[in-house]
Length: 242
Picture 1 (cartoon, rainbow, N blue to C red):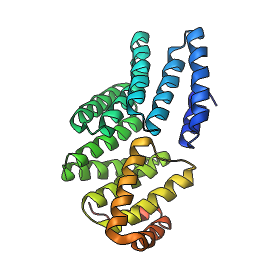
Picture 2 (picture 1 turned 120 degrees about the vertical axis):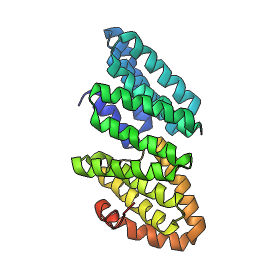
Picture 3 (picture 1 turned 60 degrees about the horizontal axis):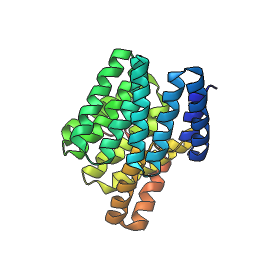
Picture 4 (picture 1 turned 90 degrees about the horizontal axis):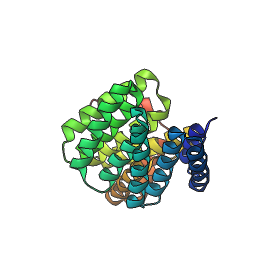
């Protein structure tokens, strides 16, 4: 595999130290070789590690460095990942209105670039902004459309994130039982791929988990969570009319 594939796989496995080592070496190589794509990918990867570690300002700084390299290159395709991170930092910082605008800009860029899977991913993030702003009907519609695209196109890597969305919507609607069950579905879906959630989704899951445990009690949460771990993701949504 090339650097991009290797570093993203390491990040998804939670191997942050390896990502940092690989990315720092890649920045040196890419700068020497005049390879802006490699440098952007490496700086983007460092931004993700910083965010996963809770360093939002550091993540934003690394993403801006990556965006500067992309802009100098003149290749609009290289702008996509840094812009995605900047939107994510805004969302995780609680500036949901700014994040919503940045995600809409990212969606437009990826439509221009002809990247349907990334468009779908950014709609997922946009839906979370709408949810956080209290626009449940808008979020519910976006999540449902997202789910249909993921299952319809067989985008396996995105199935766990569909489950995150299901848990988030249940939590926002006050259905703690379903939220606990969907958290179980989500964790099993990530485990099936040998991955862990992206930082923003991990933060959302932690909040949902805490809310569900508070509502149901530890034993009640564990019971529903265990049920969810045995469910196929499609089956978990089979009776979901939302």
